[in-house]
Length: 157
Image (cartoon, rainbow, N blue to C red; front, side):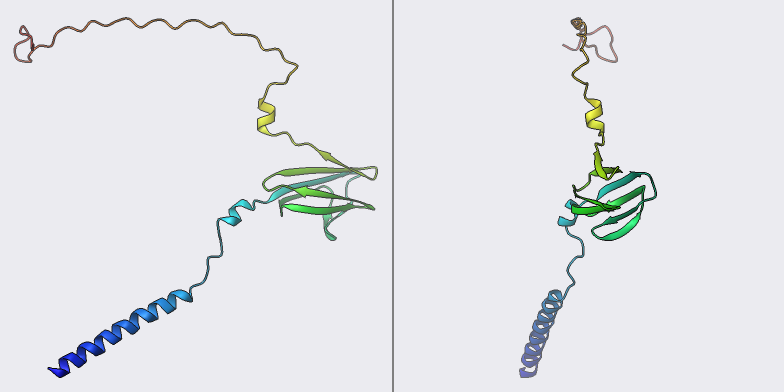
């Protein structure tokens, strides 16, 4: 009888140690590498052109190529762009595109039209009012009384 009680006590202690080990393993798990915060950090797009072409371009002091330069993924935030002896600071918004042009030692930011702005009518156009035709009133349908399927002559009610 005592051996059964000792066996029960050993099994209880074993299960207790097993559960404690599971919790300690859960504490050592690797944190996720992606979070919802990273979804908000969308990259921007930057296009740099010049007249004359084939000029060296630097961004934040690092050479990125010769004009025209198209960068599909640019970190959002402030960046310093340098072409020849001229430099300018730009701000790249998340998910937005910026187009710069260098001409005679000066940078020109070229506005990019979006689908939303091109879909809106300009204020110089006059809107022509359309004729509004009233909808026809629906005709009242008169229902006939229901009949039994086996006796078409007799009404249900």
